[in-house]
Length: 202
Length: 251
Image 1 (tube, rainbow over the protein chains, first blue to last red):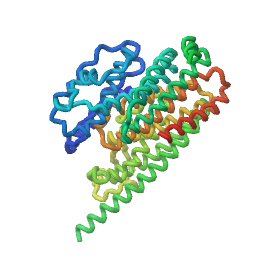
Image 2 (image 1 turned 120 degrees about the horizontal axis):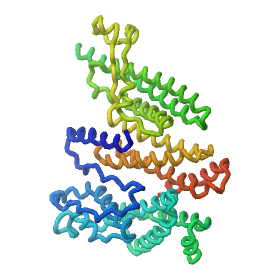
Image 3 (image 1 turned 180 degrees about the vertical axis):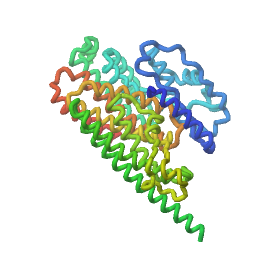
Image 4 (image 1 turned 45 degrees about the vertical axis):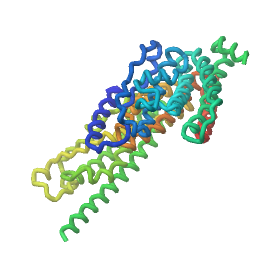
């Protein structure tokens, strides 16, 4: 059996066990499978709406859904980045996820949750820059570097409280550093003339 | 008074199972250390054979567990043996990966935990077996999905170590094989998400770190591999690992 077949089968067992356990306030899995490395060559179609708005009555459970929600924001932002190399807006995310943008109308997307999702994106992009090089794509790290530096400048304009979002933001500088190191590694070895030229300009 | 006897018997059984579980844990850990000593093709065969002998020994202990548990409610005693079983899963899946570069399934593990004994006079501890059982008995233990998952999660840490050690040995294939495999396992755990109990979700964080270390090792190999003689790769890599650990410590 392949690894993924094994896990799909296990998921079935665990779901059956969970049904027997008491209904817990934790949001249920499974989370959508992240895109495998090979799948990035062909950009996927527009992300389907996930129809979360229907769960309006879960307003009270917002806290519990935070983790899942932030991860969904990340996934939406990731897909949009892979297709367009831009940052998805909060409004676009609410459309993709099928939820309301404002608190009054129902299950909504807080600015904090949106920003947390974006920071998760930054983390995954720094990982992607490393793996792109391993896979032989030497141009992508440079694009990621530009993007992640823009994110960093953007975040610096915010005045964050000392909460979980702030803590997550603190990790951003290490992501920026990692991507810069990748770009540096490539440029000094002449892997990519474009990269080298850009570094010289900086 | 009867209650006291029953309670005492149950406590005694629990204690016997805890002892067995500890033995299983220790011997499984030793098997893992042994397997880490593989550095090249020549000694691989020898070490694998030795590891199989050790694991057979562990399985004999598991047989004793199965015998203790026959006719009993598994849930009561599961906590006594879960650690040992997880460690066993870790050891046997590690050995399986080294041999086949694939993940052993729960079924394959459980198939090896079916025991038929012919002379069960010495091993059989159940007092109320009939004459036929004394000649020939079948016992089995099934590793639960949760124990399997927790064992596999711990396996990833060992694989990360194996990957890093292999770089130092000048092996440039293993790191990439481990990286690909770990990514599949990580994707699998992400897929399960919160469906399992809390212990499973907790492992995800460590798993992600192991994966990152392995990916960084492959990156270092790819970028610097051709310019550095193999015997120096280990030094280059250990510096990078230090940097990663420092960063992780701060964040």
